[in-house]
Image 1: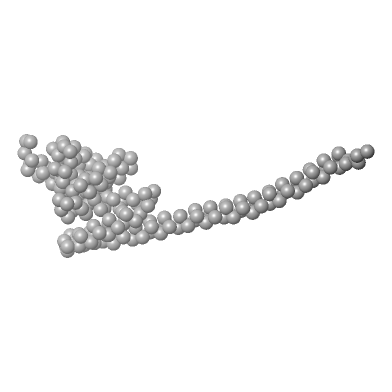
Image 2: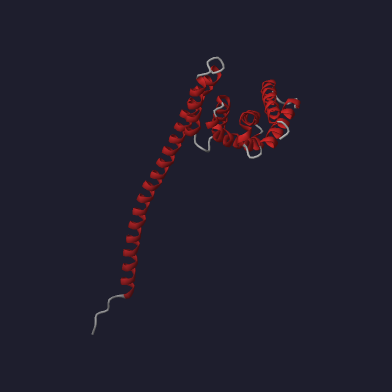
Length: 205
């Protein structure tokens, strides 16, 4: 006669062993998950620090570019370095940073100030982007920079005369707006003069 294995004893033994194995797997998974979470956190922190470092470096470049840009009014040769540092700022600052548009605006402004035709395509591209951002942010500096680029590089836009007329209207509206600070109104007035000169040179074409 075959011996009785004791069904319930065997079942309890199997369940006990299974639970022990399961607890080992859970323990191992917990250790793995801990290190994985730690790795993820470290990567997030490292990325955040890297982005913050890039932004800080870019803002420092931009500050130097701004100083050189101001100095270029008395030392015109400084405009080249103002553009270099402004471009470095634009390239260094991460896309998500609110200072990205500021860097782009300053670079665009100084390209138009230098006025090289080799800079026309870049200046127009940045000016259009500044105008698009103005529609969302209402930042007056962006639209005055746009007007400066239009006055300088009107022929590099798809429809030069229409672009000049539209920019002329923008500047007139800024000057007439009592909410606009005097400095921005003064900038708009200068750009309006340049825009009208460009329209005059264009004639009735």
